[in-house]
Length: 334
Ligand code: 13P
Image 1 (cartoon, rainbow, N blue to C red):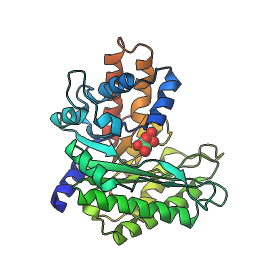
Image 2: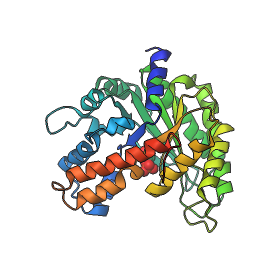
Image 3: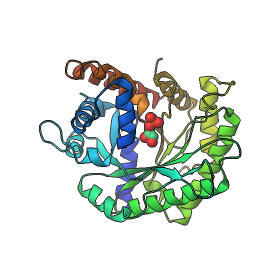
């Protein structure tokens, strides 16, 4: 696989006005989401739900690809078409979550390191044959008293870089996701400093592991105060802080940056993305790779009547895709 092909895929993921829908909830996470709205957590209900999302009419107008989970990439539409094949037929790029989750980091109480490198080369080979053209690995950085430690930041950056190099070797674009969590009462400045240190470490590690940035996408968290911080800030401050932090840490050659929603409301996630793009003069496209902020309204609606509300839930997904697609252009009207 040439770097030109990786770069082409990466650019298509952040095509103007398009972003990614993240539907790669692990078995335990989707169990929580379903429990929250009273849906029975069976394989068939998970399949029906992912079919609802992926077959939303005209989704590809605003969505370039979707991140699937191991179970999902093996599932099919009710007509027997594998999801990845269905997506490709609609012009959407299949992606796959390949990490095996964040686990306690030995020697660093309260901190996590993401695992999943063992056997990854063979898993990537199989995912490629199943249609995946990009992959995701999520590292989790917690802010608290005396954390994150440099040890945690570096261990996660190293794992992300090892994963990214393996992806590129197998012709798959790595989406590298170091998520700085919103949990806690820290202020926006603390989030800025932790994110800055995390991104510096990540791009150093990517360089060390010979990862080609032209064929890499960054999935970033925004610079926001902790959820329980007393000093919440306005949309413009989030946008300006996030763009400043990214400009000072992320090389311009990267094809694009997408954001996670991380527990922000639907409205905030869209308003923040829109405000960043309105700032203009950005070295890379900024778009979305939202999970909850793309899905939560539709899931709540669908849960009330799985059969009768299917089409309406899809129209809610489409509306979220359209709004976020406009925000990726700085053209959302609120
Ligand atoms: P949220 O947008 O719900 O944070 O999920 C995105 C994601 O993929 C986190 O890894």
